Image (cartoon, one colour):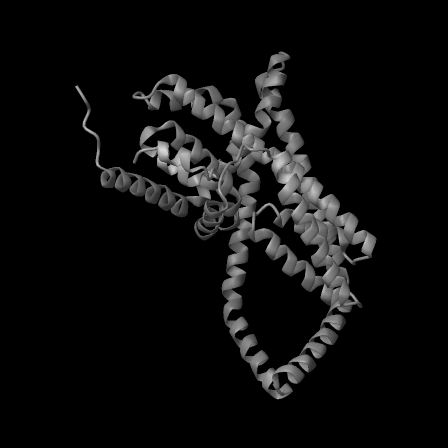
Length: 359
């Protein structure tokens, strides 16, 4: 007896409703869900080390604590280096203020010559902008306070969640397998295994890639004698973790800081050139070789996913967008009714593969 095939509009409606519910849950419960998702990523990264230590008959709790403490030390070291560079940057605030005044005067003269705007007119525009900024300042301070509170929450919760996820991983695995009683146990375990491998490859590859990008940036900046070379290189490397969008923001920030801090305006051009060359090498050699072909998501879906993640959950959502899409693609590939969605996410452009799938 043949089972009645569901119409396309019904399947599409259920899929869209499910996606809408997931996005709504992320938006409303991001304070709880985001630390758990970051903990899951960290857990996948530490899992091989934990399994190795457990195999050496080290108690399970200690096997989890040791690599977790090492990861905390590494993150703390990066934050310490970044904070030291920020303090060094602000130590020169008076010099930067003088240089900024000179740069603003030159820009004012250029605008007057090129656009015919008088200094009085420019002053009016500046005053109007400052008044709007004063209006937005309280909201900005509130948002900053909330972001700092969220950062503190992440710092406290992620290690705790990571430890508990690794400690109860067998219980969590059994729950997920038993929850899908209509699917074979082997299929569910396959999805869990592939999702873990993709998340691990992405996080580990991202860490190695960040180190290499930082090294290339700092070498280039030091050779050219750029001020705050370590700070700018580290900032650009961290922002580079947000694909497509992050490097554009890094270019703007690094070029503006160089314009203000350097006596030679051409240094800003060189900073942009170095960042561009490093980004070219990273996109064409670094990312494919380090991360490999584990995350096969096309550029269009990646950009849209990053933007949606940013709108819903801010910067953490932008970072989680790619591994989230990769896991969704794996799940979609294993379920017959959602295979067309896997094609939409995939970077495969072969028409033959698309034609084999039936809606």
